[in-house]
Amino acid sequence: MPSHLPVATSADVTNATIREVLTRYKRVALVGASAKAERPSHGVMGFLLRHGFAVTPVNPGIAGQTIHGQTVVASLDDAAPLEIVDIFRAADQVGPVVADAIRLGAKVIWMQLGVVNQDAAAAARAAGLTVVIDRCPAIEWPRLGLSAAQSSAD
Image (cartoon, rainbow, N blue to C red; front, side, top):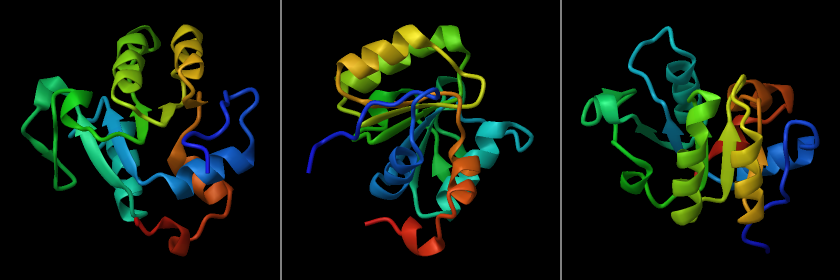
Protein backbone atom coordinates (compact mmCIF):
# COMPACT_ATOMS: atom_id res chain seq x y z
CA MET A 1 0.00 0.00 0.00
CA PRO A 2 1.46 3.41 -0.90
CA SER A 3 2.41 5.67 1.99
CA HIS A 4 0.34 8.55 0.63
CA LEU A 5 -2.96 8.88 -1.19
CA PRO A 6 -3.22 10.61 -4.56
CA VAL A 7 -2.64 14.34 -4.52
CA ALA A 8 -5.91 16.29 -4.63
CA THR A 9 -7.16 19.86 -4.50
CA SER A 10 -10.66 21.24 -4.10
CA ALA A 11 -10.93 21.35 -7.89
CA ASP A 12 -9.96 17.74 -8.45
CA VAL A 13 -10.36 15.95 -5.14
CA THR A 14 -12.59 12.92 -5.51
CA ASN A 15 -15.12 11.61 -3.07
CA ALA A 16 -13.07 8.41 -2.95
CA THR A 17 -9.94 10.32 -1.91
CA ILE A 18 -11.78 12.24 0.81
CA ARG A 19 -13.43 9.03 2.03
CA GLU A 20 -10.06 7.28 2.20
CA VAL A 21 -8.40 10.19 4.02
CA LEU A 22 -11.18 10.25 6.62
CA THR A 23 -11.24 6.49 7.16
CA ARG A 24 -7.55 5.61 6.80
CA TYR A 25 -5.88 8.29 8.89
CA LYS A 26 -6.91 8.92 12.51
CA ARG A 27 -4.29 11.31 13.92
CA VAL A 28 -5.14 14.97 13.35
CA ALA A 29 -3.11 18.02 14.28
CA LEU A 30 -5.63 20.87 14.25
CA VAL A 31 -3.70 24.09 13.64
CA GLY A 32 -5.48 27.23 14.78
CA ALA A 33 -7.47 25.46 17.48
CA SER A 34 -9.66 27.69 19.63
CA ALA A 35 -11.19 27.28 23.07
CA LYS A 36 -14.00 29.62 21.99
CA ALA A 37 -17.10 27.52 21.33
CA GLU A 38 -18.32 29.88 18.60
CA ARG A 39 -15.22 29.30 16.45
CA PRO A 40 -15.42 26.74 13.63
CA SER A 41 -12.18 25.08 14.77
CA HIS A 42 -13.76 24.33 18.15
CA GLY A 43 -16.78 22.64 16.60
CA VAL A 44 -14.77 20.68 14.05
CA MET A 45 -12.41 19.45 16.75
CA GLY A 46 -15.35 18.17 18.78
CA PHE A 47 -16.78 16.48 15.69
CA LEU A 48 -13.49 14.74 14.92
CA LEU A 49 -13.10 13.52 18.51
CA ARG A 50 -16.67 12.16 18.52
CA HIS A 51 -15.88 10.26 15.33
CA GLY A 52 -12.84 8.43 16.67
CA PHE A 53 -10.01 10.72 15.63
CA ALA A 54 -7.09 11.45 17.94
CA VAL A 55 -6.88 15.25 17.74
CA THR A 56 -4.02 17.39 18.98
CA PRO A 57 -4.95 21.08 19.09
CA VAL A 58 -2.13 23.40 17.99
CA ASN A 59 -2.09 27.07 18.99
CA PRO A 60 0.97 28.75 20.53
CA GLY A 61 -1.17 31.46 22.12
CA ILE A 62 -3.04 29.00 24.34
CA ALA A 63 -0.49 26.16 24.66
CA GLY A 64 -1.00 24.19 27.87
CA GLN A 65 -4.73 24.86 28.03
CA THR A 66 -7.26 22.17 27.16
CA ILE A 67 -9.92 22.04 24.47
CA HIS A 68 -12.41 19.17 24.53
CA GLY A 69 -10.15 17.52 27.12
CA GLN A 70 -7.07 17.63 24.85
CA THR A 71 -3.98 19.61 25.79
CA VAL A 72 -3.11 22.39 23.36
CA VAL A 73 0.47 22.31 22.05
CA ALA A 74 2.49 25.21 20.69
CA SER A 75 3.66 23.72 17.40
CA LEU A 76 3.41 20.80 15.02
CA ASP A 77 6.71 19.55 16.47
CA ASP A 78 4.82 18.94 19.72
CA ALA A 79 1.98 17.15 17.90
CA ALA A 80 4.08 14.57 16.02
CA PRO A 81 3.67 11.93 14.72
CA LEU A 82 1.40 13.49 12.13
CA GLU A 83 -1.10 12.09 9.67
CA ILE A 84 -3.64 14.82 8.85
CA VAL A 85 -2.76 18.47 9.42
CA ASP A 86 -6.08 20.35 9.47
CA ILE A 87 -5.42 24.07 9.03
CA PHE A 88 -7.64 26.83 10.44
CA ARG A 89 -5.32 29.75 9.65
CA ALA A 90 -5.42 32.66 7.23
CA ALA A 91 -4.20 31.65 3.78
CA ASP A 92 -1.08 33.82 4.07
CA GLN A 93 -0.05 31.91 7.22
CA VAL A 94 -0.34 28.42 5.71
CA GLY A 95 3.12 28.19 4.10
CA PRO A 96 5.14 27.70 7.30
CA VAL A 97 2.56 25.21 8.61
CA VAL A 98 2.87 23.14 5.44
CA ALA A 99 6.68 23.33 5.56
CA ASP A 100 6.62 21.97 9.13
CA ALA A 101 4.10 19.28 8.16
CA ILE A 102 6.34 18.13 5.30
CA ARG A 103 9.42 18.09 7.55
CA LEU A 104 7.56 16.05 10.18
CA GLY A 105 6.23 13.45 7.75
CA ALA A 106 2.53 14.32 7.59
CA LYS A 107 0.44 12.40 5.06
CA VAL A 108 -2.36 14.90 4.40
CA ILE A 109 -2.71 18.69 4.32
CA TRP A 110 -6.33 19.71 4.81
CA MET A 111 -7.06 23.43 4.36
CA GLN A 112 -10.42 24.30 5.86
CA LEU A 113 -13.26 26.16 4.18
CA GLY A 114 -12.01 29.54 2.99
CA VAL A 115 -8.35 28.59 3.39
CA VAL A 116 -6.71 28.50 -0.04
CA ASN A 117 -2.96 28.79 -0.54
CA GLN A 118 -1.93 27.31 -3.88
CA ASP A 119 1.82 27.83 -3.30
CA ALA A 120 1.68 25.87 -0.05
CA ALA A 121 -0.48 23.24 -1.73
CA ALA A 122 2.06 22.91 -4.54
CA ALA A 123 4.88 22.45 -2.01
CA ALA A 124 2.88 19.74 -0.24
CA ARG A 125 2.07 18.01 -3.54
CA ALA A 126 5.73 18.13 -4.57
CA ALA A 127 6.57 16.38 -1.29
CA GLY A 128 3.99 13.67 -2.05
CA LEU A 129 1.30 14.68 0.41
CA THR A 130 -2.41 14.44 -0.28
CA VAL A 131 -3.86 17.96 -0.34
CA VAL A 132 -7.49 18.90 0.27
CA ILE A 133 -8.36 22.59 -0.05
CA ASP A 134 -11.43 24.60 0.97
CA ARG A 135 -13.31 21.66 2.50
CA CYS A 136 -14.38 20.68 6.01
CA PRO A 137 -14.24 17.12 7.38
CA ALA A 138 -17.34 17.78 9.50
CA ILE A 139 -19.24 18.51 6.28
CA GLU A 140 -17.61 15.82 4.15
CA TRP A 141 -18.21 12.99 6.68
CA PRO A 142 -22.03 13.13 6.56
CA ARG A 143 -22.09 14.15 2.90
CA LEU A 144 -20.25 10.94 2.04
CA GLY A 145 -22.50 8.87 4.30
CA LEU A 146 -19.67 7.66 6.49
CA SER A 147 -20.82 5.68 9.50
CA ALA A 148 -19.77 5.37 13.11
CA ALA A 149 -18.26 1.95 12.29
CA GLN A 150 -15.88 3.66 9.87
CA SER A 151 -14.71 6.11 12.51
CA SER A 152 -13.10 3.78 15.02
CA ALA A 153 -9.42 4.55 15.48
CA ASP A 154 -7.03 1.65 15.02
